[in-house]
Amino acid sequence: MFQKLIRFLKAFWHIFSRPSVYFSLGFLTVGGFIGGVLFWGGFNTALEATNTETFCVSCHEMRDNVFQEIQPTIHFTNRSGVRATCPDCHVPHDWTDKIARKMQASKEVWGKIFGTIDTREKFLEHRLEMAAREWRRFEANDSLECRNCHEEAAMDLTRQSPRAAAAHERYLIEGDKTCINCHKGIAHELPNMAGIEGWE
Amino acid sequence: MQRLILIGIALLCASLAVFAAEGDLDALRGNVPLLQERTPEPLYPVENQDLRRSRAYPMQPPTIPHKIDNYQVDLNANRCMSCHSRSRVAQSQAPMISVTHYMDRDGNFLAELSPRRYFCNQCHVPQTTAPTQVDNTFVDIEELLRQPQRNGGGG
Image (cartoon, rainbow over all chains, first blue to last red):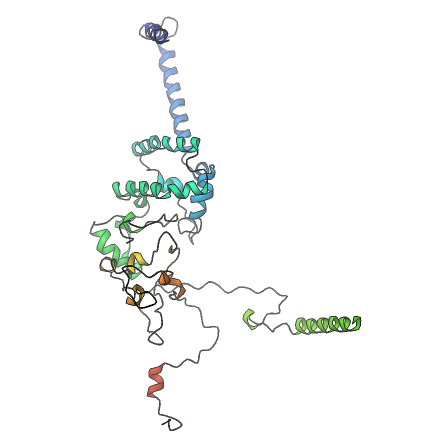
């Protein structure tokens, strides 16, 4: 079995390492270019297709739990009709970070295949673990996904309610805290918060 | 017996007819006849000024001077307590919940919020800018004390 594989690789390298006999240089370069465009376009299209709310809620784990919970919140139902969809908050927008997150998401595919959270009970059991993972991610990247829309430099504190303005002045502008430290559970229900910092 | 039932049914029909004819018996529905659909009033915005309101009497649970939309208060989390609990007020600068909230019903002090006080909205509610539906004749005790004594008073 192993020897067969070695023999196959050797044969492949034999062909691969020699100049082409029948195909012209033009064909190979142009063909390679077109092939590259097709591959890259297809890859990005597929990547973007997995980066939509429709894709996320096509699984019942998301549709029946977290998607139901976001609907009454300000990020889904509001006066101005701007909506944050799943990937806006849960997938980084920069390409490198996005790819890194997408690789982590292969674990989620594993979970889907083996039904880690395929019932409401299992979902609730894992909610703290999943939420904590997102809190850690937001703390580590200084709430980057919040700041994609809510930039602190663009905040008009005078138009915020007095307590919001005071809190932002004291903790956000000073840089002591990042969005997620205070704004947990604004889009989804919270797990049992006993022992979580700020919820004593 | 049969006659009695017939009379009963006739009375019921008659009362229903009167009810339907008058129509405006239900003042809670804004005196709109029961069979007509009423245009609902707009939802009024919640006052969000963070200015404490005076209490009508000393024991009144203070009303909430800010919005509490989607604040989670359930078995898992209590959003109110993340600012108003004893350990959180230094950071939040919010008023601490009354010391009575740390007592059980026998007056013994507890380390944590008493379970019977857990659901804040049972007593504390935000206020909207909606006009009052009915007149209120409540007179503050201070006002009563300032009024000249009528009836000469008791012994």
